Figure 1 (cartoon, rainbow, N blue to C red):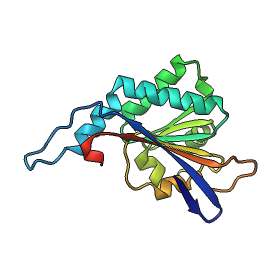
Figure 2: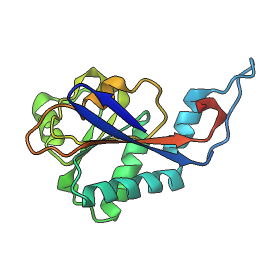
Figure 3: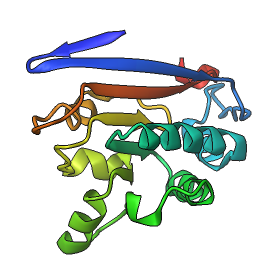
Length: 170
C-alpha cells in the first residue's frame, strides 16, 4: 500500500515472515512481547533474511535506515552483511550514547543500523530514501518521516515493514 504525506509518496512493502519463534504466555494468558522480540532478534534464519534484504537495497544504491528493537539483531545483521562482502565503510551502527563526531561518521554511511529508541529521539539523515523495520513496531509515523525529508537527488521513499506471523503482533 501507499502512504501519502505532504511533500511526496511513500511506497510501503509489507514483507511477511512465518512465525519463527514460539510465543511465551504470561500468567494472564497474554503473550510476553518483550521475550518474543528478543527471540526474534536472535533468530539466525530471520537475521539472514534481513541481511539479504539490506544487501539487495545497498546493491540497488539505496540509502537505508534499518531499525530493530534489539541490539543483538543489529549486531548479527551487520556481521552477516560483512560476510556478504558489503564493505565495512558502507555500514553505520548507532547504539546508545554516541558522541556527536562518531554519530556523524556513522550517519554518513549508506546503510545505517540503529535501535528504534535512538531513531525516535532524533536521527537526521536527510539523504535516506529507504526505511526498514527489522522487528515489529506499531508506531512508525515519526520514523517514516526520517526518510521523507527533502534532499537534492533523493529517490522515491520506500519502507519495508518485516511482519512476523506471531499472534502477538496481529
